[in-house]
Amino acid sequence: MREITATGQTVEEAVETALAQLNTSKDQTEITIVEEGKRGLLGLFGAKPAIVKVKVKPSTIEITVDYVKTILASMEISAEIKVEQKGERQVILHITGEKMGLLIGKRGQTINSLQYLAQLVANRHADPYITVILNPENYRDRREQTLTQLAERLASKAIQLHKPVKLEPMPNFERKIIHTALAGNKKVQTVSDGHEPNRYIVIKPSS
Image 1 (cartoon, rainbow, N blue to C red):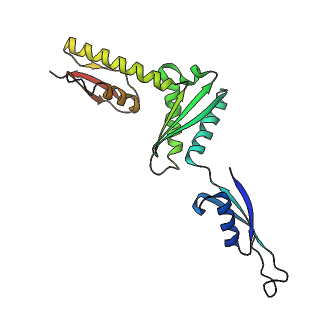
Image 2: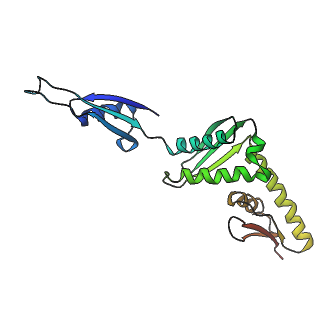
Image 3: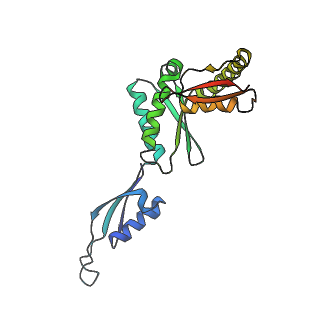
């Protein structure tokens, strides 16, 4: 967190000096007035400068990363986090280190739960709403490939049996992968059913 102390003939002047040095705006900072300042006799004798401390507020991403690091530490997982920002609405936290299997959990349940919590933390401070994706050791890329293959296999099964095929419950962002994978398949249609957090996809033959 960046913080500086600045002086000026007035508080306003000291604040402006600090903002210029930090290259930020007033609404992105926390300002503490250390000394109001004193003009002195005839504006000269006995004058004291105004002194302020100006601290840059942590960004939404910084807050989210700190939260994830705190959770990892509580799980005794040593890891590094690299941030990838895609536009204004999506942030991917690439996580590398030991015990990634523990972090991912069975069928991704642990990482999905942590991702849900991280997204709640991020969107307490974000405007507009942002999507946070936690990607330990490229798990999300591997999971997307697995889900795409699963979608294609179960679509073939639904066509062959002429019956709907129900998938296991999965989070919204994973359901989107299934929908997208089969969007071009005219022989089936996909619908989401059930209620969160147990919402699932049904693949239905089109005819």
